[in-house]
Length: 306
Length: 239
Image (cartoon, chains in turn brown, red):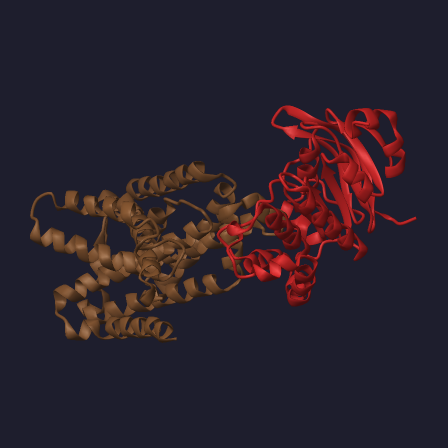
């Protein structure tokens, strides 16, 4: 009973800390906090797809699609900020469902390659339509909330909170049953009435929505982006690594993975001027070797955290 | 006479360009047990996979409860009331026994509403599962896994159960239990289409049977007729 309470104490402490963080720190840490929360959204969104056993590289594409759609509707059509977010989400839903119908019947590696191609195609489109997208020069938007980082922090924290709510819903509803069943045996699940294509499409679309929101936030926050950055595969790979290292198929795992990796990365970048990525890579390898269930798997070893 | 719940006409199928099943015709009536017997590689499992939608037929028609379900997705067929208990059981090892059962109940809103009642029914049918309810399914013994596979399929509230090799790899005493449960299931109005290598046991349980050889149905009849048939006696019953 005591242990049961401790878990809630930790969660409550984390929520309070996340809430007061921007008010007790300076600009540098606020900036770091914002990027960390954005990566937490991305890692969680990657996990949504992973729960339906989808290894997707489309997140990069949806991140860039969100960034460009939001920036362009804001600039060229004069949409207010939140309407430009909504426009990006709507377009993402349409594209995700269309892409899903085309690719979700593919399995494993073929699906991964198809989603990779999707992201690359969007990159080429952004580069080849300079009249609309600004081509390789990229786009610039006015800074978010006049550069007030506290508000930006609250916005991305709100998006993360939404992702967490969706994630908890997925864990507690019939989605959880269907996803776990599909991961073990898609055939056995389908003859028991689990519509595998529909569940995959749902998880893929939800996952796309949150990548898109992260992208839309990103472009307004950094005020400028270029295709090679918005459609960079690093984004998709980083979210995958954070989800895996934190612990797949959970809410806490990807969020924790994003926080820990972002802190390590930043610490290394500051303290080791050259080649910090090598050390960072070694930490990842060690993490995957010694924590096969991710950081949240550790709590099962240390029973008192349960 | 009962109306047929399953009617298969001229069904052919296989994998890629390899045809395994040739012009199958068979019927199952409401609430009866019918068995499909044959040697290894005769096409028994393929037949079930075609029926439950896991494989697309090359030609022919499958009618279930009077509705043509040819080329339907497996999930849709399951929701209409035909549930497949796959060979090798395929239980969800990382989930608890109770969660495995809930996956079955998730099949349709109707099955979900009846979840508690159905769960009581299947746990009484297989009391051992009641003791194991909160255990990971992967930790169950082979016999218990087979019982779970059947119980899980029953959670979908099926009208027809397709059961593939329930005796595979099980001790004779356990097989007796499983077959007893199948008889009880039939007693509750669920039709069963049973695929088995254990010909003697199957014919004792079923009312009628079909004999599959190299993808063709070579014999059919009531169980007692088949049991007296010279070919069957020689080839399968080793009399």
